[in-house]
Length: 180
Image 1: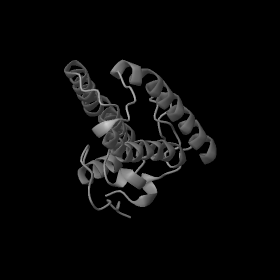
Image 2: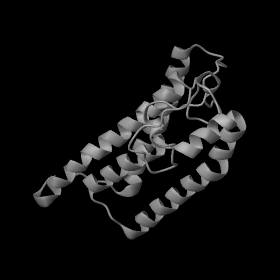
Image 3: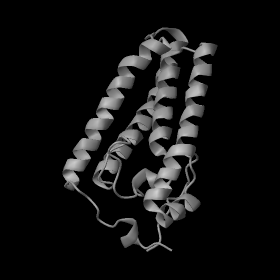
Image 4: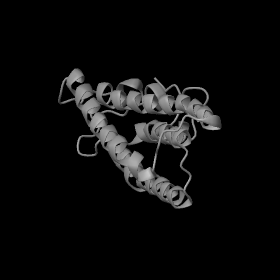
């Protein structure tokens, strides 16, 4: 059984603050790309009349989802000493914050954020829904066939212990406390 020291053995090559800043820069670039491309592709437009104004309530889960994703990006840099980009991955297993509830909170946060935006802007074209479902399937397959084996190879028993205790997509109500 892993101990807290083995789960967080220092292997950092850059200072913690530099890794956190690099992670935020990668996250900002990713968010900027998606926020500049997807709204037009999804046909988003702002309406404020009639019942449509109630759609703005979806801004709450949308903001919470994107905030959760940003917190995960920060955790990758501050705790993991890396970025969300596969070319500069975390050097330490990140099992803090939201990661104690669900293994893929960054994806869950982005999904909540985009679903909220979709509700706000009210575009339910069946072909776009099918495209989003295909993207969701592709993300799932990427996690199962690339991310999880990569994490297992890099972090071994520590990752397997984490994987046994924290679900991939559905959050735990109580945070997992890793063994000491």
